[in-house]
Length: 525
Image (cartoon, rainbow, N blue to C red; front, side, top):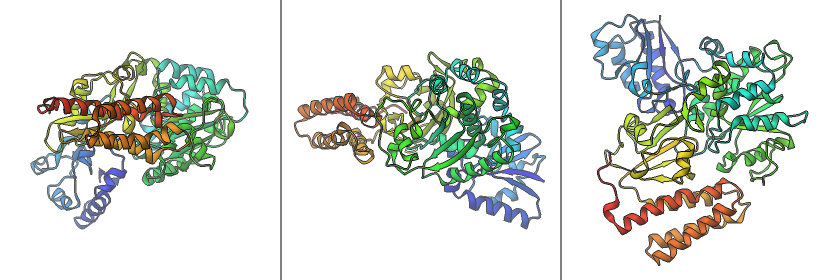
């Protein structure tokens, strides 16, 4: 019997993945060929999805992108022959060779996503066979302070965008004397061009469960919640299935792994609001209230969910922890540069030829990432602008693309890495329109609690319209800058405080092109 792998993640399903699976099983039955179809997670090479893999004596061989109508020709080429020595297979137009040798995958530095696409996402034995729960086992032999110290030593910072040191946050919760503490995973991934959280939850959910459980051991929490974006029904299905198996295997619940420790975990669906990605708004929503931003202080680490000390971290932050504990903080900290340690999964999207997830150590430049992985635009036109860090990130022009992908390096040019989203635009982009979109996005998604965000974004949209219409250009540009500075200084949270970042960066480039049309790049590929 030949083992065949086909992802069950959202991207694959959106590209007729389920129809491909049905065709595979039907064709195998018709040809009297025995196959075992494992629905794995995506490896993140979305431009090749649905990616079909076959286990052979040489390793896993890939074909893609496979459509339902391709299945018959694959069987005709004897694609599931485990000896894999037929010329008809290697000559098939969808043949990609050994999966691990595909340059897009081979040239990455995968830590958090090392199991993504390799294991069956909900098979707990498969997870254990691939070094799963080693970090949890080690944590159960450590005291709480030792776990926190190890996370501190790793240099791990919040992967949700704020980049706050994870170990410091955990230390604050650990030091609180409260009897009741909570762990909250922010899985409300709403930034444009981002999908790393979803990919990890759909491809390797146990790594998230393990990381959350280690955090609970570190701070003394007995209850955890995964606040999941409402638009991720497949992630919800896979997470709940994995959590059920974790309870059955004694990796959650009472007497965790035979210890005196108890920890319960459940998924809660989000409210469909971008603002609930902000941690205090998320906590309000978890409590059954409207998602409004809270004033800080007090910090959630001191007074969080239901007024109790709460660790709130992003999916990728928790998912990095098992590796840190299993292999040691020093190994993790050896990746990266400066204060940006470890790896970050960069998500390439927009007008791009090869979109997908690329996990690399901090320090690679944006240009290097584009040259090695993006392979130009889908439109075949020159790249013009790149928005990094989601809808609150700056639009970067070619002169800035040699900046290292590092929190401090990006801050130095007035940009943010955020959650690692990279959205590419070609030379047909209207940057003034993009600036307007950023302001309009704030109008739509603001919780409305503070005036600079609620009113400032409305006025900002109006001013940009006047600029685009050529009305009093210089005075309106100055007015827009003043308005942006007010939003930065006076907004209650990052929604209003960071909206000016894409607005000002886009308008700066737009203004340069208005003054000198030759400034618009025409030779950058």
